[in-house]
Length: 313
Image (cartoon, rainbow, N blue to C red; front, top):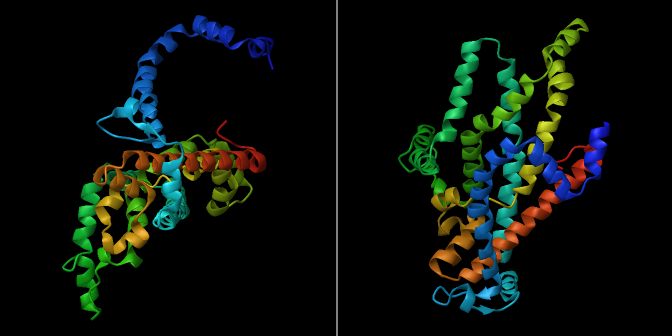
């Protein structure tokens, strides 16, 4: 550690700020608009979390609504739907982690192994494009493909199989949800892994070739170990988001017939807030979801640092 670094580490927070301001004034000033936007649109709305502890009324506002402590949370834990929506949220998040997380890594490795530049660019473009399609359009395409007169049931008819109501049968919901997620996001998510691969020193591959390593061995001995920090960082973030299942696609895909597997915390919050106008209760459920996400994130980071010596901080 250099002398300057040691001096800086011993400074107080205020002294460090003044030192940074003196050395990086232009960069700090450039960050001010971004900080203002984050404060206004990310931190200021968090004040609304307090409604989780109120019997909130739109007409009375936060100042006039009655404070009821943890009653909304007790209602949620006693709710007959509690077990179902928590179980569905965990299972969808877990399946998403198991299938969607490794898919971009595999795709990045495959793209990296392609030799012909034109084929490489075509595959990259073809896999990126679905990310820019709206969720509404994605679900519309799926409903068209899996409808009674869609291409999937037409193919089943050619082998004399009975038509299947894919969107009204619980057994297909999770597979279609995870499959569409992978198709839409695998190309875009592989960008970070391709960037990590591009930073690998090519002399390592040359040395491996001289030692007689095949391309397959080079992937396991050089490429994957070099991608390890990126993989661990994204895995920790993915674990933290395991209960943050997005509700947009589920709202478009599910129906009362598939509630038993499709109804998750975020959709339940939406129904309670928008249809029942039970804002305090829906805030309490959302806060519970956020707290669980933070616990998962901190736990993943702790175990990663302890056993893999890698972490977010």
